[in-house]
Image 1: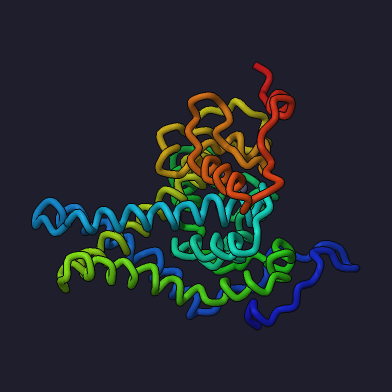
Image 2: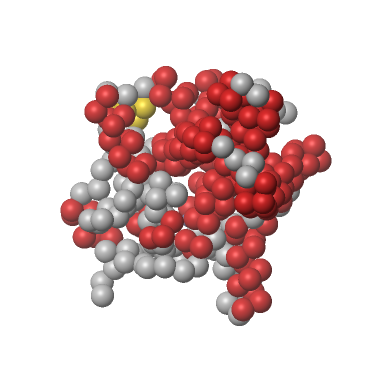
Length: 318
Ligand SMILES: [Zn+2]
Ligand SMILES: [Zn+2]
């Protein structure tokens, strides 16, 4: 049964909560995950010799890569994460669909699957049942290395699927979102082909199309992959913990700009529905600025901005 034809049902049934897992991935899906993870990664490894050794990078490649990094990155942070997973604001229908599409360009999985995994992460953060905690193997050096790999990339290859009917009944009930979700393969092709087309047009050459496919398609996807995955790995291992979260989430400032504010991860776990993660002075949070702009334009409403009282309540006593 595909998501598109699975009926939306409440998360709770007469027999209690639904199980957290829902079968295993089909072989074709499993191969897809390997392709989506490994191909951009191989491009990333090849990127440095190509750029430095042969100079095969132009301004058009950099410009297109930047635009696609920002659009797909904000699609993940503002869309998949703060809006769809945590409901930190309400969005009008065109914005809702645009956010689901933008996030789909990041090659991080269909929107409903991503949200189901992430809601499960919050439900069991750093305990048994968390899909990507670095702390499941112990605290010795070998266990931590294993935990780092698992939380950063390894968990993606786990064939157990998060039960979408338990974690995302709201999204399964939304016909627009089910449609965007079911067309994930198409968005993954477009996120490579459109940059290539633009590169070809800007430089009016086949080589321009190829270098844009490489830099603005594959390398850009790989960079965003690893920034997003660092929130699951690094931001649950090292960093500052000024807020009272019930897990090992931490604030990691060097990742703030590249992650559009997501690396203020300790605040996020202490107050998951808050629309702003970088709540302190000087904590840059580009996603929060974008949400503010949507609010001013009248596209977003009921934004859950942090309040002084709430921040005081979640600040760890020192
Ligand atoms: Zn987390
Ligand atoms: Zn979250």
